[in-house]
Image 1: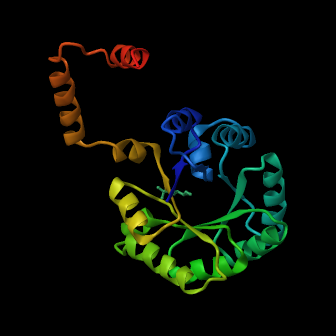
Image 2: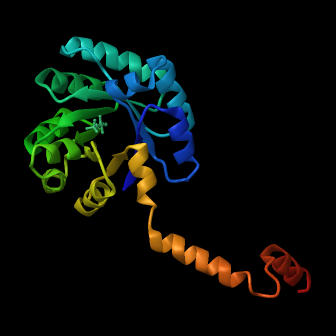
Length: 229
Ligand code: E4P
């Protein structure tokens, strides 16, 4: 499963990029507004840093406007993926952008038939909103499972399932178990993915025990050993 960071904050992206596991970034108008700064410069800087897909969302609500904005956004950087809302107008825009060879991320998906239509329109990614579905007492995990099953039934549908609106590590587990192609994860959740008290306790114990051996310098030991051969 690919891992995207769900943020417009470059400091957060730089930190997670250094982990060596980051495949891309998603933004949306709310994240751009929260981050402040210039929209286009921000997504360009993110795309330069990440060297992977970076979703940037259109604001127009009519098909022609979305296509115009999408074509312009795609010119900002080769990694830009045009994010389009899952409306009837959005579907038409996705079809035209796909015909132009422009990648799209169809956002605000809350039920599996919407995902089927987005795939038929030629979406590169479909973004089911796991957390917001859980918020209304349905199952975000079920939504991802059903979309993955439907896409799996039809070889001609090559849209990737991008689990979005992730609120906690269990959502990441659910996305991976269901076979999602991508999970886009907020910075705070990403940090929690690594947390485990037994990892910390175990690491401390190993270091404490190691401090009792006569020579604790591994680099020195290996260098001397290699030179002696
Ligand atoms: C990303 O592509 C989505 O816009 C984002 O995950 C939505 O998350 P939220 O439901 O927490 O706002």
